[in-house]
Length: 194
Image 1: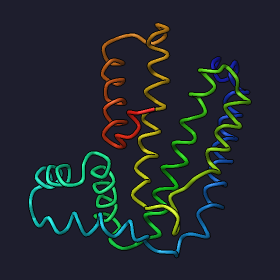
Image 2: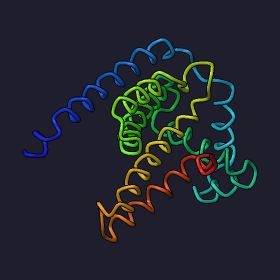
Image 3: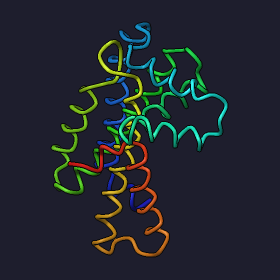
Image 4: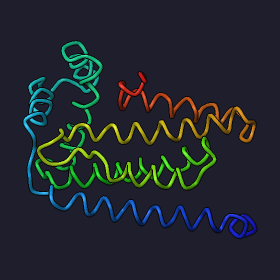
């Protein structure tokens, strides 16, 4: 209870930010719900299914060999969405916007911690929430996996900062840090390069 009293302003700002990001995502999403897939969405769906009934690991290796590291994660992501939603394009977009909102919210503490400036963190998060979205005819749906990667990357950097400042200690945090870095790289290998 003391923590809440001492950090009530920070908690209020963070909760207000969650509401703002959610409203921005709802307003950005609505116009694009009925557009359908882009041409760039069809080839990863077809490519995955043309590989036949092989087990998942064999499919991943075949995709990796033919399409390389940059396409493999997008092909797997869109086919994972296809597994759950079939051809319900609206569900793909809703999922991407939820992931984008989560990545925007994960960005706020990262900027606030590194720059020690809540206003900068707030403005950055709102601008990121309004910016680029993989919706409609402009971007492939498969790019939504980048939002997962950005979320994990933010969590990695926040945890790493606390680890090197000795605020968090122990082997469990080392495992957490390792997992966050691995998830970042697996979900979007292009995040490895600045």
